[in-house]
Amino acid sequence: MTGLQIVQIPVLSDNYVYLVHEPRDRLTGVVDPSLAEPVLETLDRQGWKLDYIINTHHHWDHTGGNVALKAETGAFIVGPQAEAQRIPLIDRALKEGERFRFGQAEAQILDIPGHTSGHIAYWFEPDDVLFCGDTLFSLGCGRLFEGTPAQMWNSLSKIRRLPDSTRVYCGHEYTEANGRFALTVEPENADLISMMARIRATRARGQPTVPSRLGDEKAANPFLRADKRELQAAIGMAGSDPVAVFARVRSQKDNFRG
Ligand code: ZN
Ligand code: FE
Image 1: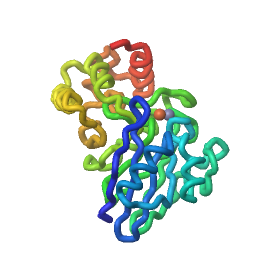
Image 2: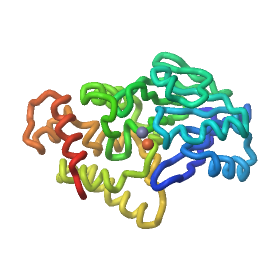
Image 3: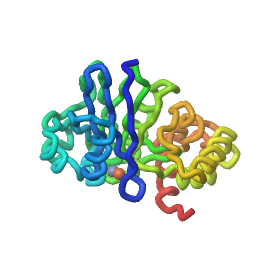
Image 4: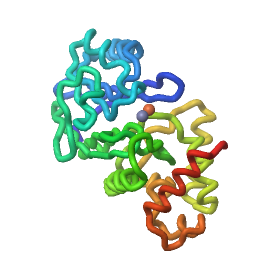
């Protein structure tokens, strides 16, 4: 544990931008800044100075603040190597196997393509923190804009191998709608039912459901469960290839109007 402090900034209709602060060396980063202004305001309120911009993938709602924030603060920008040409003003391109040192803290980089072709995650293992952009959502996963079901299933399986105690900081507050869909896939999943009850109560109070706990996602998120007997049986695909099961559930979600 390095005592990482995380401040969550809701922006646009449902994005989350995160300030990450390492208190010993007093370093601050921002993960996936959609916009500059709310980030600058929050930095000001915290009394922090921005050192790093940390991007998970190239979409504008995750990088839109790069240029203005760099102009304002001189922050150093890190992002995915495989999308380096699409990350505005990137200074250092990262890929799986590399580490991003952040003061006393350090993130391991995971390649998790599928939503975009070069999407990465930042795993701060000692702090149990994962920034996974639009790959894994609470009770959902990102749309396959640039990848195949096999790639996305492989990426999600990689995330599933991390400890249950990992806190999942994803890019959007989509949880309740994801959960409504998940219940159509596995209506009898007791973990999902109880998680959804907690989520509805949280949203009714106007509070964020993010971060979630990876252990809960493993038990309830249908996109992490394509190889589970219970899920396969629930959709009439017992014994099928997990990639085919994942692809079926993903396309059902694409067409879900709930
Ligand atoms: Zn995205
Ligand atoms: Fe996004």
